[in-house]
Image 1: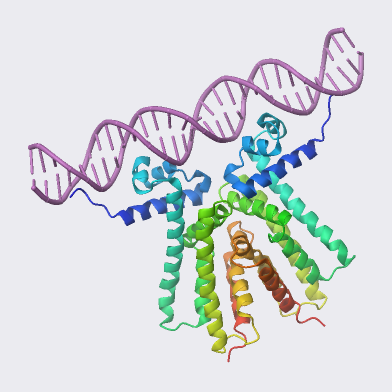
Image 2: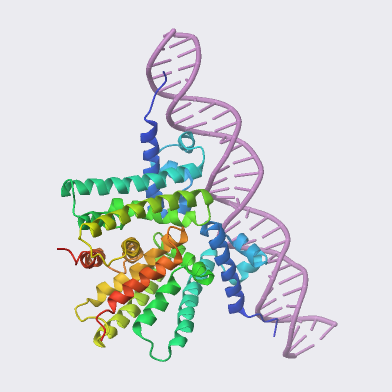
Length: 200
Length: 200
DNA sequence: TCCTTTTCCATACACTTGACATATTACATC
DNA sequence: GATGTAATATGTCAAGTGTATGGAAAAGGA
């Protein structure tokens, strides 16, 4: 058997290099050659792991989603087996906002993902399915919280879910330095507090 | 005097062509040549009106902001001289969301603007200043509404402003078809209703 | 009629891109 | 050590990029 490298790990290394390029220079500069340079390998090596540039981008984007989900799972361990839905939602939202370096990298990647999806049928499907799945997850949490009496029964689960996800709209304000990260957290907490205000 | 064309009008024509390219093919395809083709002129002609590609992009982006502001002003005329702040905010938000073709074009342009601002110092300054200005406008409306007793005095103007602007976070959900435009409007109205719930 | 000024355009240049083809290196097994 | 194959490096090519340049076309004043 010839030399065997961890294929998955190599792809992740390249994906992280791509993140850095996207974060520092924008997705337009995320060419095979520049990503290769950032990763410290030849562009031929990148081609060995990704047949096309698009394949590389799609992997890097999916990987960003996975990493975000992973960070949420990590943070949730501190809250035990059955975390309060407010804490759960708070972790999800704060990990989606660009409040620390890792989250910023994946956030920017997501933004580029969405923008790309608007004129690429393939990516559109992937992004929509991913977002729809995430949205259903949140709606399920909201419905359960209503059933548990933690959110007022007069609230509409679908609308509350949409309003929760809308909080990611704070991203441009944070990224451009219009508001401080603390102000964003205050807004998130304020919204969650009102949502769960009917709690016993 | 030599032939005189309306310089401003020509630049706006090119800007609109750029919007169409951005909307249909993404900002990556907004090259001087492709924009020229979309506008039905030579790329030399485009160069006559914009010395560089960046100048063209910046103009198209600023023009998008102006057009959005214009649409808001137009819609507001129906509400008379002193519109209710809730109506004012509702118009501002709905014109920022991609709920009709014009708004979608400018919304996508704005999204590209923000993404570009993250790694371009020049655009960063412009985008931040523009957003900061818009945010101050909204905060002023909120403060006045509190002073007028239309919003509860217990509300923090800064946080409420941030939560209002966060509603633009519905954009990706709408654009990718995760939620229907009506659901977005429902969410906006729900949020506004609660904000003004303390009204006499 | 010529001249000046503005508008517009074709071309050229240097450069980057993605994709592909080819060459080289590294290493586990026979 | 020979061999085969995965991993990596390098080269090539057509297509596309931004922009500099030179000059045509148009329109009015002299």
